[in-house]
Image (cartoon, rainbow, N blue to C red):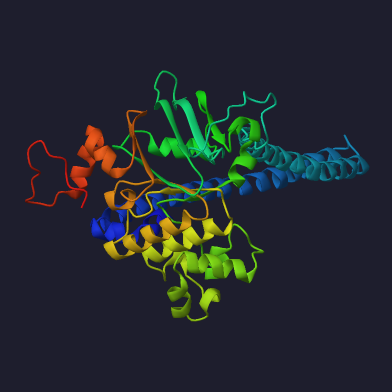
Length: 400
């Protein structure tokens, strides 16, 4: 709870939740304190009780044995022998009680290990029985298989609650495809299927014309790189963060992705350049710089498909324009599939795929969809209109 509060301290302060978080942490501290006091009370009772029982038993044996020896009903040798037997028996008995406690603790740990071992395991290799091979054409007239194709994909996280209901589209080589739609349309689910976190209920996800089940997760993931909207920059140097996926990357490759991601100014500004420490979670970098670091890290692996999930959601206009330019340049090296809500991010895409209710309801360029797709026109209008603006009746919003 303390880590939770400190990790989101700006949010806590903005929402004036300091007292609530303090009370939450204080309650947990009080619970831990009470549990510790109860444990100390039990220990303070048990230890003296055990010692009293052991020493009291010896005292009782001495008293009773002394009386028997004094009354001539027993011999001194019998008393000494009994005392020796009792002293030799005490240590094994105490060891038995300690062993019982250790066994109980071990059984608890063993139960947790068994629970962990029963968790489902992700298999990264190909399926035992290769799936049906499905080939799709790439760009018209090229004869090239697209890096990614979804063929009538159906999927649901729970039975009888489908999320995707027949999604089909392709991402051709060196093309930028945008995936748009209202919240809950299934965009993030499509990314989860492409990354291999789930298996489609029916249909197929194909890489280079081959089903993902036939290739295996490991082979599929070697073809892709992902830049999430929550960019992960770990504590360490800028070089370590960029080369996270390829630790032994040569200097020439690092320079290539630094230039491609427009990080040259950042490298020159930081003391130490690529060897500068970026702080915990990239605290010394701006939001746009963290996005470009994540993009450079993805491009260093030279994927055939780059997945961008809301890459400009937390950026200002200047950083958004810079990242949009970087995405267009990245499309020269690999295919790019981007999920975005901002129109400025997708309007220059080679093709836009519109999802609604888990279905593909439109595909085309920005101008084509404005003219022919009501949902896209509605989404575009919500992005383009400023307060006080109104579109003319029966007229699509301007592309500018």
